[in-house]
Image (cartoon, rainbow, N blue to C red; front, side, top):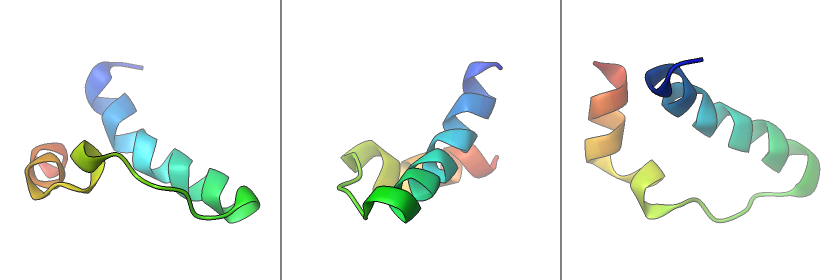
Length: 41
């Protein structure tokens, strides 16, 4: 898995973990608009 695919998968992985153990805090870089725009390119 390359870095770009890993960064796209990371938020989904957190959602799966949150489903089982409860919603945790997300890193600032994950919730930033710049990150979201970069990943969708």
